[in-house]
Length: 327
Image 1 (cartoon, one colour):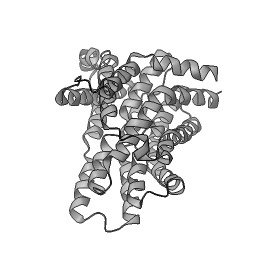
Image 2 (cartoon, one colour):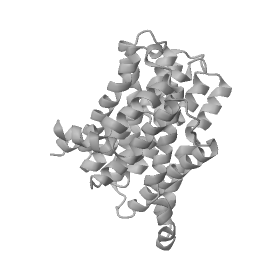
Image 3 (cartoon, one colour):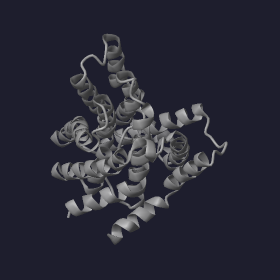
């Protein structure tokens, strides 16, 4: 237990997490501090491409075989399975929610938060714990299955909720989402580029990530403070779900990572991915699939509750679980 508090304290006092809380304070006090939308978008694009690129470069040291193929397949299966689990839990614990709202929330918890993932990677780096570089490819593949699962749950619950035109837009949103293209594209570019080219751009895509992540989390903190609808409006059953669902996902991810032979660092990262909740790709898809569901509900849960919980408490906890499972 002492180790958990020690790791949580270390994570809390990191520049990235402190930047997030600076943003929360600024947004909560209605300060005029803000990061211009175009700059915030550029930071997001940089982070997604840089994470993918570094993962592709790191994969060069691995022989692509059954181990990596298994890991990628497992990642997709987890992303597809978790929304069904989350939907079932919501059905038992939050019975006041209608079918579409439950499915929309569940899809968020099957997908991932790439910023939570990036924060976990930096945390492991500070702790000097290594991990498999192909985890980045696993992350890139864990957006789409959750959206597909959410859409299936919506259609199963109410077959008339999505018309043909909306279905086409959803398919485009799922398979041509910008974050997925950037992550996978950056990963492929990093993997197939020649060594001279990689060395030329490495200083831009490696060292600045820590500083740029601080600015991104600052913007996220401002966004959380200004968009959060409040515990009273959400209801305590949903608020509690936002805390215990990532822990359930983290345990599932850690056990799975251990079973498929990932290192302690790799297991912790997979646990973080399964525990995180999307606030970029899935909200966009759900606004098309179920426009009648209030977006502030699922955005407040994923961004206002689960996201800060993971970056402060969750990530160190998932590492402890991974260390325990890894002996």
